[in-house]
Length: 206
Image (cartoon, rainbow, N blue to C red; front, side):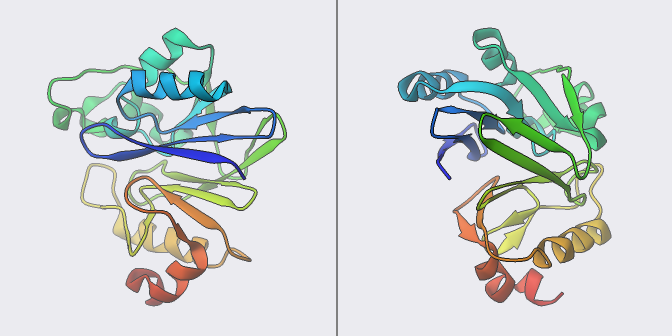
């Protein structure tokens, strides 16, 4: 499954393009450096239909406004994080160095939903813990995990809306997915679900 990863923003967030063989696709978690993202879209001649957030922390959505002002793409957001689109205490905007953002979702995503773009289907898996709405997207052999699952770790649960018990349940749910997937996390390096099942100490304790 074709994808491109850009590392953007002050917290080195992984922003992904996932697209089919006709270059129709989505942008996931545009956390900053909007022009870099737009240049990459132009360079690859991608037709972006949606901007999708795995969760609504500032470092995953700061570039949304500028992207939507340049390309016509609806914003898709997990329902549990809708308040964070306009509430800086929930989006952690105080960490953004003076930046401000207020967004409106064009579609709210629930567990079990499917988002179709060209030949691609993204299946929504709600994985609360890092935030109430944190979600993973399963598309072909890719599992986009946001700040739920990292290579060798998982996302913090001590911010507003975080829940350590919910995170544990979410990691259990991911560990029980059948088969193996390329894991594309919100920060850090690409891994695989099978590797995390065996080597991630937080998943091995499950």
